Length: 176
Picture (tube, rainbow, N blue to C red):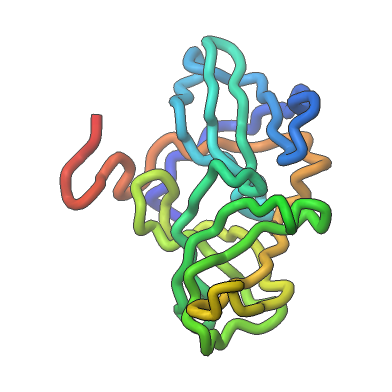
């Protein structure tokens, strides 16, 4: 994406102890131009966002965490939903795309991208691939199990998106 400003790669220096969602530390911080909530990626796809930051290190919370919410879209069907972590899918290493129409057309291996509909994640980043779909317990909507494109348990290097078109914009107004 030509509108992304990417950093040089940072090393993953360790994983957060006892965090089932695979949060990790990188060897970059504010001294390197990083900011809180900057998106973090590998060449395979989106891995998460910076949730704690110091001058020389940062903590990245992954897309497996229920604390992360990402506007998402199918590259094939253009169906939209929200990606978030799910404790019930964690053992499989998957996250969940919620708020799909009951008659979803998503199928196994369809690519899911960031929709760019909130200001925290840019449009067009690969999130992962559809594993399966189902109907929510309420019966009112469907969901999809999403396998992250990146291997979140074995990361060694990541890049950070420090700027992109639409960053900080919410409802047409820029956030500071």
